[in-house]
Image 1 (cartoon, rainbow, N blue to C red):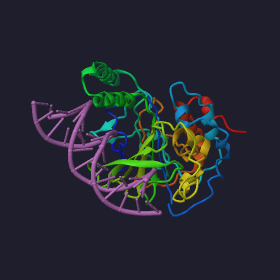
Image 2 (tube, helix red, strand yellow):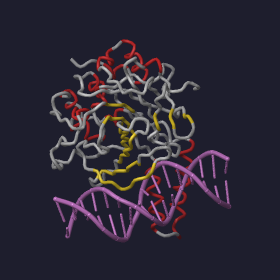
Image 3 (cartoon, rainbow, N blue to C red):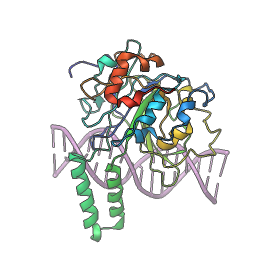
Image 4 (cartoon, rainbow, N blue to C red):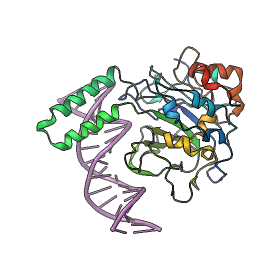
Length: 322
DNA sequence: CGGCTTTGACCCGCGC
DNA sequence: GCGCGGGTCAAAGCCG
């Protein structure tokens, strides 16, 4: 892909080379005003009926019907710029860290799209070999310290499919409240970016969901959040502030607990999924301009976009909600 | 005092 | 083999 992403290219939040491909990941952007706060329940009533997590829906054995419901829902309060799903092929990478999107046909003039890559979920080739290595390490680790063994086990688990979803949000705050409780466990400087990347883990016991938050160096006002894994619990009843999160930007307010419970993933994204990939199959998706112009939610119903999305999701996915 | 953040160290994979 | 970069760990400190 020789075309430059029109001035806006997405710094790959996944950096997935060590993870297997084949999982699903979406990336979307939202324009938010972190200082505002709306009622989170007004937009996505339909979603509330679905307990299927978005993550689950995007897995290989996915039943997209649930998502379809989500997509056919009421207009979100924020703008989704793009969504990307990558099944098996890795993203087209520009250099090492930059994901170069394609999907030009899916881009509408007033939309700005981010691209995403996905990892995890895959179990072929590289990940397999790595996994085998790790497994062997664990097995042979009898003589080694238990610490080492534990680490190896952890790595094996890590290599195992962990669906990831990335989305971009216009926000002044890095860590957006999404209803879950997160504990920061690391921060690293990002190459070629003045902004550090923060690593968070869900504090709920046995929940292995993680998320990474970094600010786009292309657009400092944009926060790139990457969720990894699925929540195996409901949103904590007692959240600091209130359940919806005082800091929750409007874009996040469309989230509904049932879905969030499954993914830790903002449902607004579901509602405003945008076309994002080529007809020929999933690759990546790219913004044609750097301005994060809000994307009209009607896009989802646009015939062309619909078609694009159909490429990405089974037809049932877009069945309109009565 | 518990929960959280900070931050340097460490581990690992990858490219050269 | 070495260096780089990403991701994670864990001790220390902070805060309510």
